[in-house]
Structures are given as C-alpha cells and as structure tokens.
Length: 511
Image (cartoon, rainbow, N blue to C red):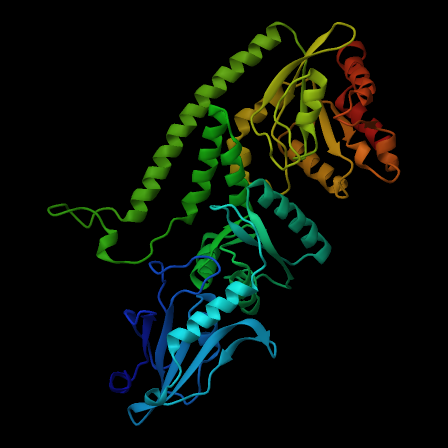
C-alpha cells in the first residue's frame, strides 16, 4: 500500500471485513479518500458495520475530523491511518468507537505503533467493543419486526414550538407501531442545506442509535430528496420524514377501495421526486443488442411506470367519485339534511358518531384511527332525521399530495348543511388545533358552510373550562347525558331557525 501510494502520489484505502477479506479498494487523491456507499454490507440497527477502514496518509498525524465522522456515521469497526516515511510504512494510528463517553469524546485513539509491531488482536478488540454497546442498551421487550426509531426535530423557531411538534410526532410514531427509543430537539439559526442538523449532532445521533439499538430516524421536518440521500449516505440508517410517516399510517389504516386508491396515489406522488440514478454504469441502461442508442435508463423506466400508474389511479378515482356523486344525489332527492363532523385528528369525532347513532365504528385514542368516511342516520326527538358523516381528521402540515388525493372524499363536506367542528378541549394546544382546522376549511373553501363548534372531552379537564368554551357547546362524546344541548342546537339550525355561517361565526367570536 505504501509503495503504490508513494508511486501514484495518492492515498489508498482498504475496506476489510472481520474475516480478513478485502471488500473494497479505494483510490483517493493526495489529501483524502472517499468511502463508497456500503449498501451490500450488513447494517442492522444497534450493531457495528462489520468492516474496518485502513488508508495511507502523507501527513504525520493520525485520523482527521473527516475520518472520525466516516467511522461514526458509517458505524465502522475501526478507522486506521497508515503514515509513510520514504515510501515505507511508519506508524499505524487506529481509532474506535466508545460505548460511553470518555473526556467528552465518543471515540478512542490507540497508541500508534509500527504495523509489524502490532500486538493486540484486532478481532477480539472489535468484539469486546460491540459487546459493551449491547450491554449499555436499555432492556426492552420488543416484538420482532417493529422499528425502533429516534425522533429528530430541527427548527429555527422557539424550543416550545419544537417540543409541541415533537409530542405530536411521537403520537404519530405510536400510531404507526414504531417504538421511540430517544428524541433529539435542536434549534438552529439556519437549517443545514445537506443534513438539516449540524455534523456534530449527526455524529451524536448515530452513536445514540448504536447505544439504543435504533434502526430508523424520523425527522419532524419535510426533507428534500437530496437531504434524504445525504443523511442516509452518511448515517447508514433508514431515514423518513413526517410526510412519509403520515402516508405509511394512512396506508395501513385505509379499508375502502377508494381510500386505498387515494393513499397509493399520494405515495406515488411523494416517491416520484425521490427517484435518482445511483451511478452512470452501463448496467443502469437497457436496450439490448441491435437497439438504436443506449435505450432507457433505469430512472426513466421507473418514472414512466409511476406516471402510468398515476394515470390509471386517477381514472379509477374518478369512477368511484361518480358513484359517490350519485349517492349524494339520491340523498338530495329525499331532502335529508347532512351534518359532517370535522376537526383535528383524535378530537373524538368517531366516538361522537358512535354515541349519537348507537354505532360501533372503530374509535381509539390514537391519531388517524379511522380514515374512511362513514355515514349514519340520526333521528332527533321530534322524529326528524339527518345523515351524519364522519370524515378524516386534520393535522398540521398535512401533506399537500395527501390533501389532493382525498379531494373526492372531502367532497362530502361540500354537500353538508352543517359542519360540527369537534375540538379536544383537554389538549393544552387546542387553540392551535382550532386554527389549523379553520385554515384548512378556508383553503378548501368550506368556510361558507355553517359551522358549529363542539368542545369535547370536558370530563378530562381538571381545571375550570376556558371562558370561551364555557359559552360554547361542551360535551363528553362518551357520555350521552351531555349531548341533549348539542342535539337541540343542531335541530334548531336544520329545521326550526337555520343560522347562517356568519351568524354562527359571530356568536362564536362573541363567546
């Protein structure tokens, strides 16, 4: 290595497996080497990679900052730098990770020795380090197949906003069946263009994943395709953002044919800009012998297939939308008023529908427990009937593609004679949730429909109700005895003296 490196005036590196097999030979320049993406080498959460890097160096120092970052982020067993003197080996400088910090450092530098004078067994040292990492992890009972994630929130706003958003992200992770092993909140003046967070914090997170056995990073911010690639190439951990997490939850919860089509369409639109070529090798081309030109690249084929699938899904959704339109026409012919439940996710809409109509729709204390719209008949005490519809809950930063995909479902709201905005008054962020829902209703141009605010979960409020809620309609969706006032107001609006949307809004503002 030293002879070739001196002759070429370039650094030479080896990626060596624990068995001694050389996996990669890396040719750098005079000052550095660049480790390739190690996709084919194991990378299970909570374990070291199983390979070490040894490279030559023209300086007399050991591993530099870039070497340490590569070792930590790629979870290499070791990073060794071989210095040279007159074209011959001089000293071997070796660094390895530490299960616990020592003097505020997460890595240790061994005493440099001549390669021929190395006495310590490399393999036994690596196995000892990995065992210490295993022992330092907290004991958890986890079902096989469940992801263990570290939640990350990086923002330029206040820490209070970040913590509030992080709390919601942890609830989304719970809804997706992900075990949260740790959380990281960082406030920066400006987001890093490549990694979102700083390099030092990225190193801390990778070491945190080793100590906690995490295999997944979930970012609270929406990541661009280039940011996802940068983080995955430097951390070797799976990386998703808030948008992808919400899409995965929707995909697992959708039950109707229409819901499944909508989710698949949103996922494909999200995936399209994430496609990228990995290299320019001829293996990325298709065309065959005798074809004119190189043919299509793998990237172009993937894009074409996704666009073709999106076109088919769009046609199917239009067909389903026509069926839904005919059902709404049938209701209009029978002159049956329609009441739609709207609100933030997990505000209690499905529970309220169950109590009002004596139904058994799935209702859990979980974000997005129900997605598919459900309609039931509701009979008032005066023998009048309405159709009451439960729709998908809203959430802050709702993905635009998801909102567009659910247009046909949200069309139900346009046919409503009255909207019931269900508000979780027990949530300390209920005012912010109300604003999110109001903004989305305005964005969907539904603010012209009369909307009645219903403050739910009053049984979970320990202190006195806020003054604004005391003058509104306060209920507990699980307790039918709290609903007569709501039923009376609904009946009054729909049959006796209909309020306009401006009157309801004015009354709410007065309250």
